[in-house]
Image (cartoon, rainbow, N blue to C red; front, side, top):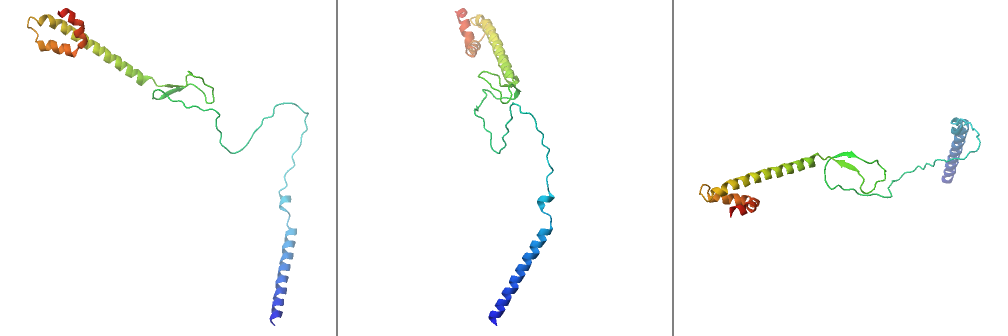
Length: 167
């Protein structure tokens, strides 16, 4: 009995596989194809006379664009940029103005240095006047020697200028 059940189960399995294949193939033949359902509309074609001209070439792709020539530009001073005097991609030459940095902080430093110089010159002129007044009074004893010596050490340039008159 054993070989009979094995043969019977084989026949039942084969019948099921055959029937499933028949049902599947008949179901597919009844449905319209996807290509026929999504048919593209026709495109009209227009003929034209042959002519000569430039044809633009467009290349599409993924990648990285890199310049052939690059240069690093460093400033000699720091500050805020107030004007950019070139366009991107423009050819520049040595000595061309590229950017303008805000000159106000540097002008303020120049003005402060000029003011300090003027102050120092005024103090020197005052010290020279004091020396001019003190030198004739020194031999008479109206001015202490320490005052004249302090003026000489404080303003060495005034001592050189006034020393010939002291003799």
